[in-house]
Length: 210
Image (tube, rainbow, N blue to C red):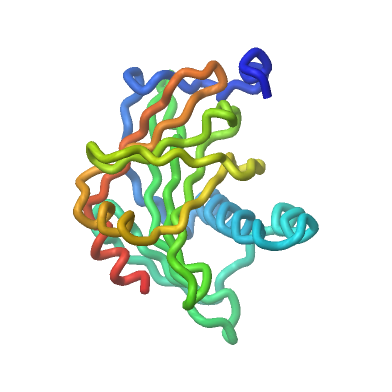
């Protein structure tokens, strides 16, 4: 996509970071919109290791309902564990959502989640941003004043645009000792949007996630 073509699907209402008032939020996954977003994000990205037909099937599938679920807050992070069926093992995810007030209207700007895709695999860090972002710009992840990591956006679906990152050493330690992460992306007009992510409670939630 060329820079000239990008504004055609600009993120509606997104403004530069200096004009946004961010609110850290731990939305309940019992809220239908939130539950659909997280399940769609994780199932879509998890299908990335499968053939294309598997990815398309994940995109088309409706989110499954849980037969049991529990939630607990760890300061600015929330942990949710659920079972899809009675025969399934419990699956847990820790997450945080950041909203901003845009033209007197609250808009979800960033969703962050961590989960283990399988017991023998490292935890994965998932990011979701609104539709209409400038895709070639990807995402920048920075912990406090550390070196920023650049991530490509992997896929977009009706719930937003998503990417993921293996949460391994030394990045895990950076999250545990850090005060704040910053995720930066570009809106459809290629203006930077820098979103703060609180790391308060991350260590306790991550310990409970295992």
